[in-house]
Length: 178
Image (cartoon, rainbow, N blue to C red; front, top):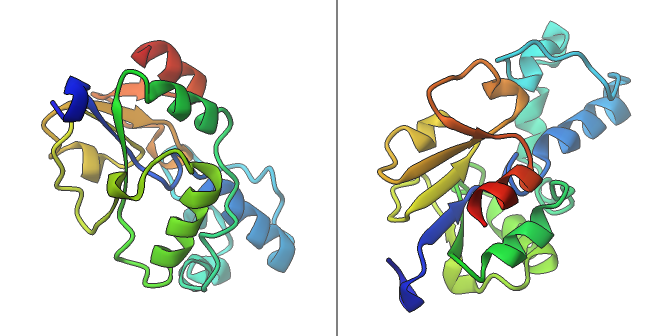
């Protein structure tokens, strides 16, 4: 348990709090005319559903300064996380070390959309080796080694994964963790 004897709730940013998928779709649409309602094969990453000549474009986008700064928040995430603070010690845990420019962008993004989460509860990391009671993440590489309750947040790339407690949206999170 953490301070105030509240359980620790760790929440991933990309494709959990921040709609990174929507940001990529917007950029592909703007720059290459890809349809915003692109059919995505279950279990595939977004870039694996694009024409072959665009498959590496995501690396260019994600490494640009500002990429992470204007991502829209997931529907109902702000209100739900704010409400969960009454029962949980909430931490945001993001693997921000892989993309150098993401650190400042993500910190500023959290300050805009989640100003009620103190800087002491923001963890930018490589591997998510953390101590918490619950982890909400869209990647099983982060959930698999985690020792607490694991909630897999649905994203197109993980729809074929089984064996994890799944949440499809923030309303489901609110209902499950209230």
